[in-house]
Length: 169
Image 1 (spheres, helix red, strand yellow):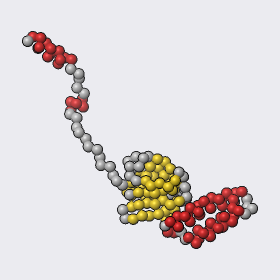
Image 2 (cartoon, rainbow, N blue to C red):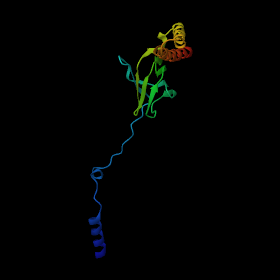
Image 3 (cartoon, one colour):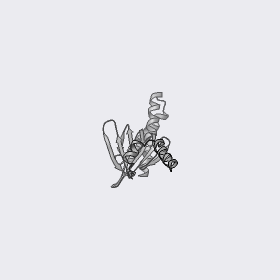
């Protein structure tokens, strides 16, 4: 009997200290529901087209290829090439022609698109784009200065992308 009492008192003395969290009682937490929407901020130097607006999907033309971005997308930084930025909302789809910029996918379903220029796709006339492309090709192939040829090559890239975008819309 005495041995048992000594053993019990030894256990009380050698017990590990209880952490403060265990003393107040651990509370069970639940994960927050993950939103199925993407928060889009689409920003130009002179205005914000979207400012943390919830959308379903955004399709971009990046330098590594076309890609669609949904909620829970892996974080990434993409350089935008001239092309269409398509925003899919619950009310419908809006298409913008973007001349270039960057798209940054952040954790927590946030996408920030910084573009140099962007215009609604419906503002462009296929005939005007075709004639401007022809003029840029003429300047690029003529005996103009190196600077004029470089500018014409950039115009050709943009007008070709715009013409392709208008053909798909």
